Structures are given as C-alpha cells and as structure tokens.
Figure 1: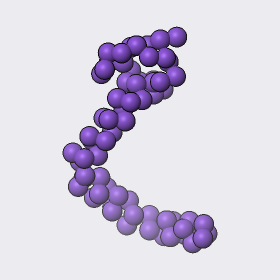
Figure 2: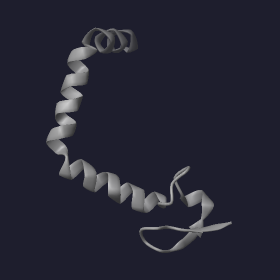
Figure 3: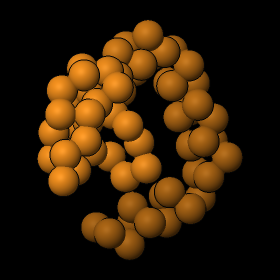
Figure 4: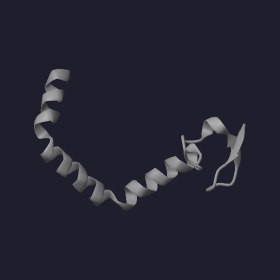
Length: 66
C-alpha cells in the first residue's frame, strides 16, 4: 500500500511512515534535526531541569547498570 508524504509529496510504502503521521521517516528525521538545532538552548535547559528533579533515580539506575 502506498501513501503520499505531506512534506516531500512522494508516494512511498506505508512502512516508510511514522505511525499515525503523514510524514515519511526521512522528512520526520529532517524535521527533528532542524528542531533540535533551532531549540538547542531550550532542550539543554529542559534536560538540566529533568536531571536536577530526578538526580537520585538517574544515579541509582546508572550505578546498578555498571
């Protein structure tokens, strides 16, 4: 079965699409890449905030892994 990507307008197999999205995997990969570049500081701050709020759990998982 074929489906058309809304971004690149190319018909591709249904296996080349993200579940429940109209973007093919290639377009989705490019979108995520550009989003991360545009929002680098925001993502860094979110990551830092998450770490500080969950520091004990993260360190516990890391120590049990090693």
